[in-house]
Image (cartoon, rainbow, N blue to C red; front, side, top):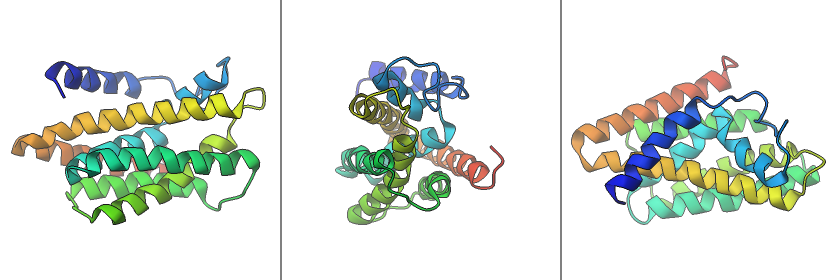
Length: 197
């Protein structure tokens, strides 16, 4: 990744952080299925932290994890989204979403190098919860296909931000900074878990 691309990704993060969450998180006020799906993960802190964490943890794991985790997540998330659209109930969806931030953040904070298959299974489990939430909040007037494509692309962009942050691990100081970001992700997840956010 070039310095320009890395700089662009890092500059995108603050924009995502300061976006207004309330009206767009469920698609309210957005006039297409694609746009509603695209903005849903980006404007919800509970989704942002987990999806950035997937890319960042993949970067900690190195190749091929840096690419496999950000591919597994949206693929399995699309399956979870389909379950949400057709109304298949999954218990404790919001708890699962919050726990994804806590657990993935802690894995980054402690620089856990899990086997790739374990990481992929864990990320896949969390992806089902995120996907179900997306699918369950599909605005009735929109196409499920456009909405699904939108939320998969939005999710992918958040993974790219996490991967870009993972390039901090090329230096020892950067590694500590990335681990600190993991700790912050875990705290945000905990705030959602305990109803503080």
